[in-house]
Length: 286
Ligand SMILES: N[C@@H](CCC(=O)N[C@@H](CS)C(=O)NCC(=O)O)C(=O)O
Image (cartoon, rainbow, N blue to C red):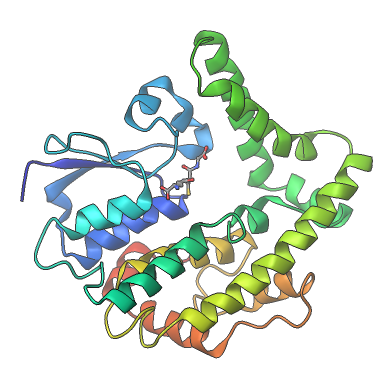
């Protein structure tokens, strides 16, 4: 293999976990690369030094002396890791499987499928007050403080202004007294969760068993796995009860009462969670 590369990651990040699943699937040993933890909970991804690595301020990223440009998107990270060793097994060679894998990846990376809907939004005062008592509030508030501090220190940096507005537009629902503006926030969350339920149904119809697009684990499995695990974690599932969708299902049913996790999704999850790579990266849900 070429010279050592560096994976920028964070234990609590769904998209960073795709790197670790891909590395495990490809059998790349831990001494073949370096790992740098970017603590999202301390908002270290907003450090101007990290923005030089990844101008989006997100994880994962990969740097390597063999690369002209850093890799800053999880989809590209998996594909690059796939090319490091042996045959390309994660990107399907069959055209139909490849396009189905892409459709599945697009679904979990889409605005409609984003896990933020499940993690940060609330549909009523009760949910809002409950969320205000969790680490989600600290996360959003810490981010806002860090962004403002970095903007003061780096006033001309183009990253901070838009990000302050973006994070602030969500953080305010956690910090300001509950009032009129929350009503629209709740309505939007409810609508987004109805759409989320539809996306899960669409995912179920796209899945081919035993794995996402057929007989072997591909990039599609990797992206859906980290996404679904993160959503289960985000709604407060028992993290050791890996097969138990109840908490997430009930959470979604509050917006989409007919929703149930589909037969194929459950079977696929049982298959993917039985793999050695899953067990290595997910000793419990996160
Ligand atoms: N499209 C990017 C999204 C990466 C992403 O949003 N990562 C999250 C963690 S799961 C992150 O770093 N968030 C920090 C932020 O947006 O400030 C990818 O797939 O790599």
